Image (tube, rainbow, N blue to C red; front, side):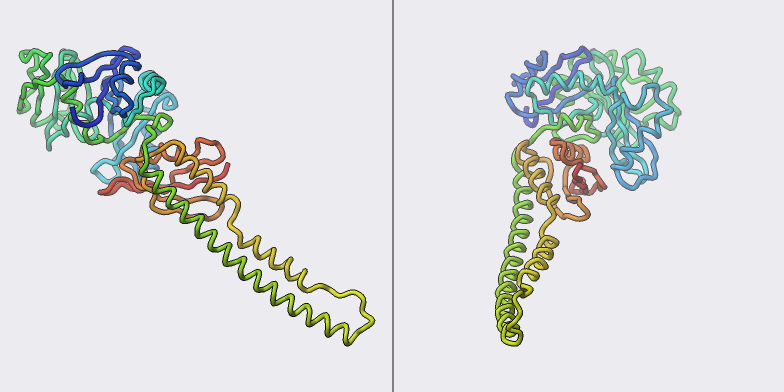
Length: 399
């Protein structure tokens, strides 16, 4: 199978499944078995849809980062769990002012992800399995019928899982305007076609898959879906691209500082030579006119003090140099290929970065990586989505 290895978490703790090398069968095992199958390559993780809520919220926020922070509190009264016990992912919806939200129990997410990380598996993202289905057509849904039940994608960011016996009841409580006009149904080979009848009057287009259900879902992960649920602390550390970009930018900044310091040193040396000549002339004149004078004020020493004060004021702030060192160390030590650094500037005690990534989650992981040493904290000031991904602006601030 081409593309990343797709691993599906089981509802049973610590158990996973993945496609065999020939792609025609599914293998099962624990995190250690996943690590052996991955052989160092990153995986993409599918999580049970029944454990994840997918919804949309309307917010006045202009920035995705603002929406991500505010959305949990908007839906707080609609959910039973304490929002502090949940993990959230947020994405911009097609409608202005509307945002997609995915959330699940944080401890349960850790129970799936932590054993894989402990076994040495690099995880490239984690999603609800329904978001691996093909996108729903206009006014329609897509569905996958398996032996364990239905997976249904109702929109770009929404979907649900249902037992065979409950699908009709779920459709029955929907407002007629929310029901699909058509449904594209894929029937996995482990499921009897006779029990895959879609309840309701929607037009159905059915195809019988010869691939395992996991292969059908894996095909949807060749491109990264929205709403990546992988926590930033588990982010995969990539290799190369961003590190080289960052080193080049940091080297350019240090080189500019070096050129500035060299030019300043040259000006200081020239000023010292001029002042020395003035002092010699002044001393000769004073002693010629006032031979009784035994003590002369040294203007060169006074000038040196003034120059030293000017040089100290012009010298690059220590916070900037410390921040460049910490940022370079954080970027070089754990490689990362998901971030492209576009600009770097310093002001008001903060190092300001503009980066490009494929998703806001990547920027959050990068910020967590920068703050890993504890000397700095990274704040995402804004994140804007565009045709080429997400442009994020971060501030790195000394603690």
